[in-house]
Length: 123
Image (tube, rainbow, N blue to C red; front, side, top):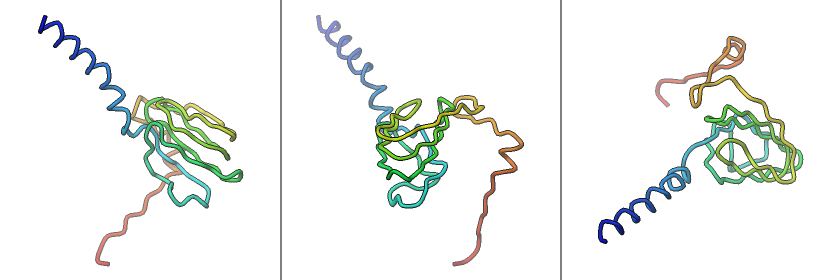
């Protein structure tokens, strides 16, 4: 009887692990956001169930790491989910990007568009 209860307890615990793990997991990243948002900026990671309120004229571009979905959202409330956002009161345009799960495939055109600047030295 003891082992049966222990087994049921173990199964119950294993059933909730995915929801615990996904609660704080980075699932998307902000590519860009129009001005006016103090709490979200470009290159911020987003977690499941995080919500972002946009003004009617604000636009945000989000890339999902695991579903290879890229969204451009204007206005409304954005709720981050595992594979795509839930958008309430705004408009969303979704495209699929070339990627391999969380390892994106960068084309030569994308490489030419990207840039980075590193400043080193004393302040």
